Length: 216
Ligand code: MAN
View 1 (cartoon, helix red, strand yellow):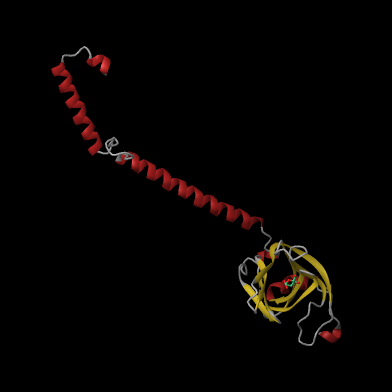
View 2 (view 1 turned 180 degrees about the vertical axis):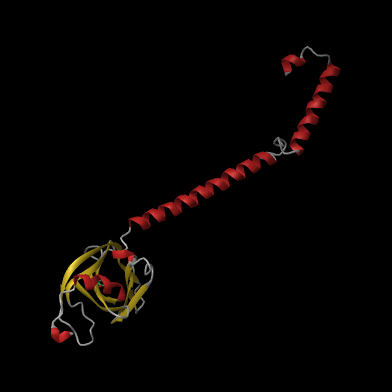
């Protein structure tokens, strides 16, 4: 521009400068050019484009998050016939001595101090195994009994002082009502929960040892 201007007579230069200035003002007013007189300002079009990109970025982030959670959900064992899917994130608790124990389906187990000493994570849900129970029947019916049972493994809980990370085996037995029957600590920070639940009934029937005639 300036090389070209050098060949022009001054009056023509002024006319061209005025035209260029007018064009610049028009472009700024119509949002196509940044107003360079205000530091950091951007044109309306640029701002709109930037905001559209930011909105699209936020959208991608949210969709990725939901994709991750769907993938995690697919990878999670929901038990035979997906039986625990309906119970997911529901919790059941038991008052026992100085603690309230809580078991959240396919999520976590907690030990909550009733004396205000805080809560300990007793484990995060890992997988469903099967083990053979061999317990005496009880008069109240709240027993694992004998036979193969589902065991929900919860591990990687809060570190035990001078010990391992807390973990819990949640043994399930068929019962009409959902209830934690008892919690025991076989070794330091290794817990066993015995839980009665209708969710265990169908699968238990398939593996149940035949009951004696007296029981029927
Ligand atoms: C707390 C509880 C107990 C555990 C000890 C270990 O008191 O979590 O169950 O045995 O910590 O120090």
